[in-house]
Image: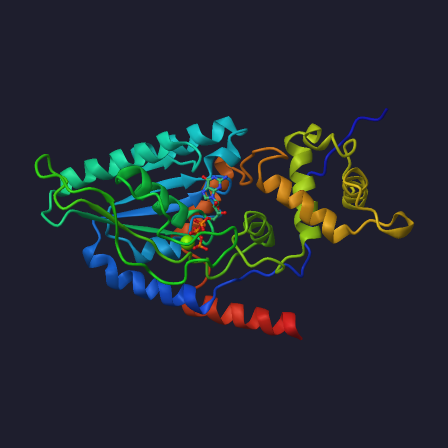
Length: 335
Ligand SMILES: Nc1nc2c(ncn2[C@@H]2O[C@H](COP(=O)(O)OP(=O)(O)OP(=O)(O)O)[C@@H](O)[C@H]2O)c(=O)[nH]1
Ligand SMILES: [Mg+2]
């Protein structure tokens, strides 16, 4: 049998949008600047599966001047890429932490860091930290975990969470995550503020938009599920085609793959016709649960890191240009 050869590149359809900069993203950036005077530490969350694509330089600029740590969230969903964590740790040193909502020890490590910072700040009003990041990276989930681990008897959620972009719309009120200490230095305790996810004003390449859509960082349906599933097939073939062996043997053909998914799940319609949209949605749901490999999607080669650094140093467009680009994109889509 001929050896399977995966696609070496992915042809991004021209219909893929390059912007998703909503009014409330713009408003959140302005609002963040007004709360900074009370903040001693910024906790910037990035999705571990997209360490570069969920880094938002605009957001970073809005909170510049404030000490910052980077929390790579959803570590559990990228754990098959072992080199990635080491590389990021080397890149950021002590500034980076890796978090997984299912591993309480990762929440405890972050709480320890917050307490250390509180001792350093040594303020009688305690420490106030601000959580920022792109939409759906897990900011509110992190706040809830910090609160339920760090304080006693508070197990209910204070922040609403959900597996879609745009769940949090406003900067919340501060939430206590570490109780005050009479002696020992965390003063009045540690408090954390949650904030709405802020998207990049403009994304230069459609592939980044596809990746962000795969991790649900933009509205569902903006990029059709079949395109996302095709991209995922392309990536799985590069990681390990065996990942989907329960459906079919290695293929580069998305229709063949989705047909196999429909057949295996007993979802063929009358006449043996598959519902491609339903199969694609099923594939995405499986991958998002980590059942089709837990790999980092971003390329972390030296070249990609350098390219990303250049982009971050001078983002392609300003906030206002981003808002305009999104409006134009919407007009085009509605035409
Ligand atoms: N597997 C896994 N899922 C996580 C983790 N952290 C958060 N999630 C899930 O990610 C989704 C988004 O979480 P949220 O906390 O609402 O994300 P957010 O950043 O506050 O989103 P916005 O408010 O929309 O910007 C939810 O379905 C969470 O259950 C994690 O460490 N591992
Ligand atoms: Mg939220």
